[in-house]
Length: 193
Image (cartoon, rainbow, N blue to C red; front, top):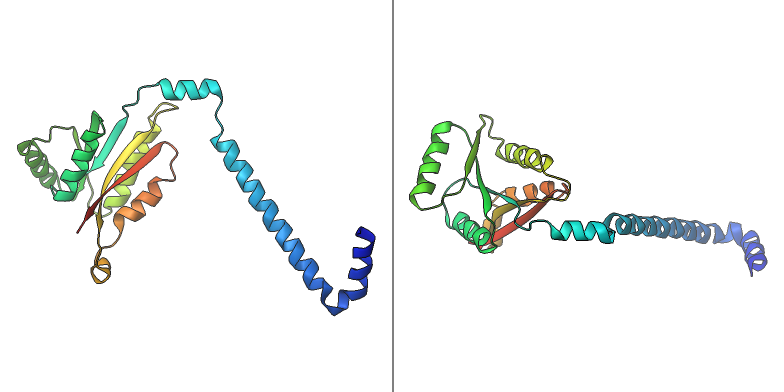
């Protein structure tokens, strides 16, 4: 069969057999790269029995960072969801342009009975997402080997396609960026408007 293939390819090479050879070679290369990718993913996901026991036996109540810009229905839904999951170590994180704004929000949270640790950073450059990302990354870097930092983001879900363009998709971009960190798990709590 191999000899016959070589004879046919040699005889018909100028007539277009080179296209078939090129396509077959490209497909073989593509399939080998896909197989390599799946092998790498499988190796990355594999866990030994001892490691599985160690990871599942540890305390299941991890640290949660819940970003807050203001007290809103979306924020309240996200806080209630975090509490209903049984999380106890919930940090409210706020990024603002001045300290007065952060202290006013902290007072408002205390007034409505949200008694969680409140951390804030002041930035003058309106780069709130970048500051939040840096805070989450630094918290994740301080974790032990098997721990996971949980970030809960309230996300607006706009059903009207004309109104959707009015919202900039910050939550989705931030989620995609945070998901690249192996020590961070991201929950988005949708609020439909």
